[in-house]
Length: 437
Image (cartoon, rainbow, N blue to C red; front, side, top):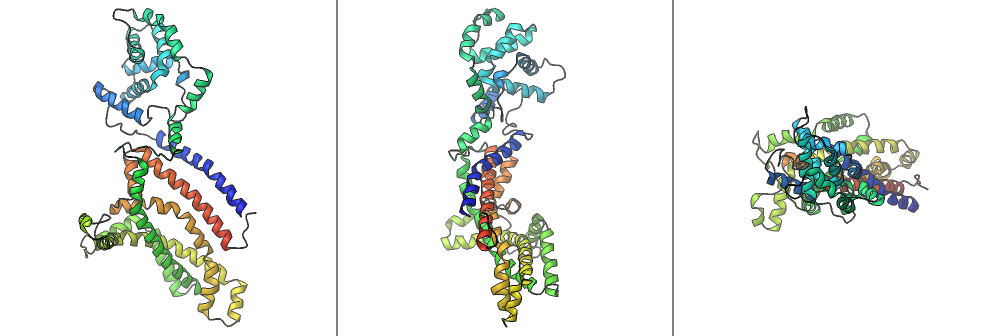
């Protein structure tokens, strides 16, 4: 089993890399852009410059995965210049803005293609547009200089400065991309900064982790404490009235959406219909800073009563069925019948033999709960306003905060893989019939 564990551990880095690649592509190729609402096409030059600085700060001015700007053709660049200047018939405002952003983001890689446009362009308006873009990158021509002749005179100078070797172009193809910059930071355990508040993502995750762990750990402990005895009791008397009623109850809980259950319990216990016993939202009271440690502890428990109850009810529904099925399979085994034949009581048979061996599938589920402990329940945290990882992920997606979303999902993906490994190892350790050799 040690060899199997080593092989699985060695597979974790490439698997995390592939998972992060898929997540990165999904986020960056989805409609919408972070901060796009801040500056619209056609606004003041200062605002446009602010938008360019924002994109450069978060590497949003780079291509997502492949950088083909060293091979950009003069024809493509001419279309961008014409579209950005409003000279292309039928171009939509969105296409015009995309062309402006492509020209803003190109940087030094556009110098030589722009030079080719200036030297060959016949349309005077496109020629002036290309001259303005080129002048912004390398400095304008002296006043009164004829455009085509002036730029042709500077060709050798610009080629010496901006021409790329094959090796440089190959590096730019994969190195000057958003994904390459993201993984360069990730290797240093730097998840970047939030595009919303500029705070380091890893620091925000550290602050949000406490409320989430408080909710999930307490809920999962209660779910296991209730689900295992419930499943064992159902398996002890299959098809009995108790088994039928518990099966119907847990299936009903499992089928109810958590947001619906949360809304109903909020209405009953928090909004005075008919009770007003529990707070409707939050992780602690406003005046919790003035309380003692013990008072703050009980205040947090008071706020977590409803979220923990809902999380526990939803989780124990599935766990109790796993426990019931696991025990039912063991109850039919020969060693259980032999224990009964030796005269052991039914309670001793169920607890010492059936339950102990039937809990293997349920216990191995603990490994897969690692990402749940980290990311929490998005729905429950949003409904109850708990400032944990679930609410943070929801708000980050709404704000298109790519770095924050990637930080949460990459860590959750890594924990999922670690959890699966732990589940496999637990199963092999608990069941001697399983071998990974």
